[in-house]
Length: 379
Image (cartoon, rainbow, N blue to C red; front, side, top):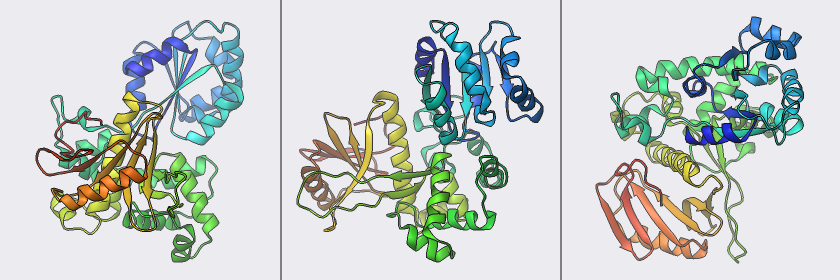
């Protein structure tokens, strides 16, 4: 909430971006308990703002206004620009919430540039669920994922409802003409291929559609926070490097639901276990990193000869390599492979993150550590 407060003091409007049901409304109301709240997904409210947006804003008193699902009313953004420009020095006036990144960012760039601060809200991380009265063990966070409601009850029922709403309502509202059965099949395929290199042609052939259709669906899934395409890192070296991004469903709860995994004992014996753990740790590290180093860039590194770093943090002045193992990894061979990859990727140090107990310094630049040992750890 500290970042939100900082942006609120700096800008007339703040845009809070995140997937549906990630907790944007809860955070906004906790941050501004006395603000006017306008849910633009409600048909009646949306109609009022589409018809007379300026009146709907100006007839309210001077308290801040929360505009939930702001992408539903595109005309709102030009109206906000005019109101903000009447007094550019007045900050902390409008809190915009949205779950459709491309629509909102396009509107902001075209009409509200320089007038709005932008903050991403991710699902819960370990440091948030390990504390408090209703703490959740690390294994359950991995199994269920970080959406608050998925952690409270039957995560599979929650995810099934989420998927149906996403396919049948959210994407059509955003103008994507979809075949629900096809999109569901694509999502299930992505769960099976979690962490693999993206091959749109191969996916399209398996689904019986063109790779253009696959790319279009993936674009929308990425822009609505369900998919991450992790790009490869390149240096000017003589090795042949992988050029395709790696593809992940961002929340492990979604992966496990699509693969019909409902308990940790089922996950422990499933072929996707290693890839699921890799995706979970990558998302967790990225979320932690952005809180402390918001400008870090994230990559993977792989050569045609097999050298690989699962996650490369590029902080500008330093690169740090992370290798992820689902079990224990006291192997000296793993450490030597990572150290060689660090040298070729020009990374200063590396870590092997696994589920074995303790922390072990394996080589001068390589340390193995239990990922859950410190829920707020960063390299």
